Length: 349
Length: 250
Image (cartoon, rainbow over all chains, first blue to last red; front, side):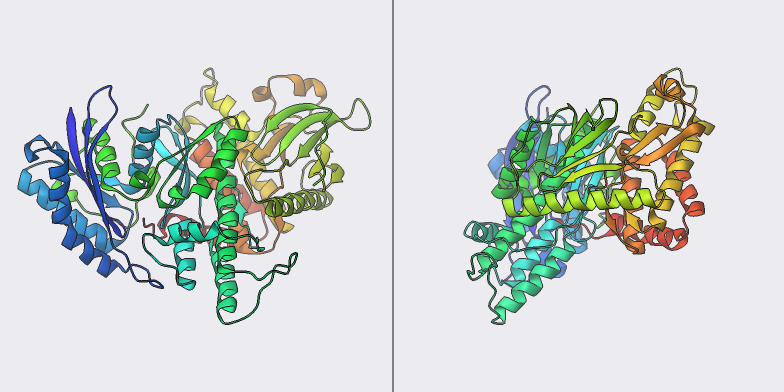
């Protein structure tokens, strides 16, 4: 039986989670708490401010996580933290916290790849054994499949990530960042009716969102400055809700298409969606229809695990720890750039 | 969209985008391939119709253009863009993907492990792939989905020779035939050509992780055989960096 505490802070969420692994039993989540830095509408989260947020909350969160879990410090086997990828300043502040805990409690450190954390947590929660993984968040858009001890990236966004595209579009329309811009776009999209013609860019198993963002930003800009836009078929006025609807329908169709291509390519019928955008129910629904057509199914988790959290770092870290992996304090750095396929996955066959 | 009608043929593959059938065209002894893009119920109907029609027409045009410019690809027999249907020439032979997998899995093969793969026949095939893609880019066509599944190995030999085990076919007598232009486009942009190669690189190395050396032969051959290769390959470096080093948050 091993217990790990995980610290995550690669973007605007600070998460602390405690997990217990018992051989041949599912992992037990002892606590999983999070505090999010929310920026005002029209603004993104800046690295400097986000780091300040993490620094001022990390002690509270660790204390609270320990209390909720009922675990004593003595029982903890290792301290896992996000090594990357992510924003530099927030990553650093969490790495400092992890190092401090390691020295204070005299426990080994385990540096974890953020993307691998998402994948492993998704597999654990859903029971998907060997799925094609769509990892969609504010910073990442990747289609991943496992082969030969690595999570290999089959397709990805060639420019900006899907979440980044949604976040920036939300800023243009002054949509609230609370609880998350993507969530608010999703709610507005439910009221949208007209599909406007947006660039659709799929290149093999890769896709591109910068053209979409440029187009829809310009379109929204014209609308905001008073230009009347009408649907060519019905003659109805185009609303901001229609823009959210069109953006989702188009961008998600691209994501489902590249995922389907990867599934056909590797011969898999399971698909697992992870990352913050993976909470979106329309995306899950579209993916489900596609997977069913291929005789398979979609696996998705809810916001506790989709959105960045500490428990996934604890979980992936503990998997590595059990194979004998630790990160010496001298090497306990963090990095903004850390590819999913750089990690040697020793814990899988 | 016109209602689906039963296809007189055998379903070969339910790909990501299209269903592919083997059938015959006009004559019972002329084999053909029918490619149908079925409705994708996951996407908005308007978007679905727009994409299906566009891709069907675009694919047929690109196939014609390639063929008339001497790049090997299936000949188009018939197009019905309302149904999203193309009937085209049947290409006999394994895909490069299957070919490589068979080759790597073949235990009797002395050159099974990557460092030892120094099989001239395999090198000739890679050489040929580079040449074919080079020609394609020289006539300003972007394939859009270059994977080893979309490259076929077609024997030039007699039907008898073709019937023998594909791995034993003399590769010097083989042609590389490009298929599936569903995501293709006409473009003279270096960026588009570089991305085309980048897509191939990623697909190749993720499907055949131990075959890095073979991929380098493709790029080498492309460099020598494509007129605009210098600029495109320089651009490829940039595209690679963009994919690998762009900031990845969240």
